[in-house]
Image (cartoon, rainbow, N blue to C red):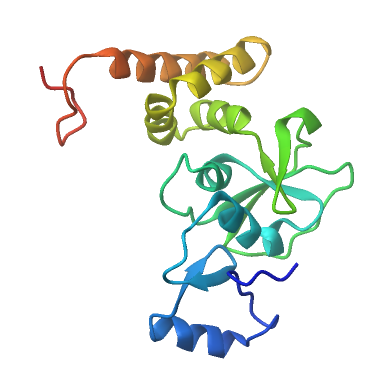
Length: 191
């Protein structure tokens, strides 16, 4: 799928031409592609830029999915991918990808711009469960409705690994959000 706002090496321009356009300030890198420097970085653009990595069998998960959904502001490196198809995928060794060979529940996957991405609820629950506590807490504070949905997702699966840890992270973010005052530069609340 060719987009007027997203360029991949070899599609319309070579990697050398795309890199030169970046040096000139015309393009900026996003995912596996490039976009005009003055274009808005949207959910569609972020998801589509991961298409060459995910292919048809993988989904963006964890911090990569959070970045696509806007829950993480900075593109992660490496990207996290997980199996979304019944058939296993083979990945050539790459420092740009961490592959999790566990099949995602189809209910936890959505299609954005032709790219499989874990749902926001599953993504936030995974961030809280699997060691990305700061990112999970920030996202939960900024979207309390999503935080509650993630809590329900975890509670509906009592045997999910690290569920108690995730609930503690989400509860802590909810408590932090409920405190009066503005956040201080070090992250604590001022009264």
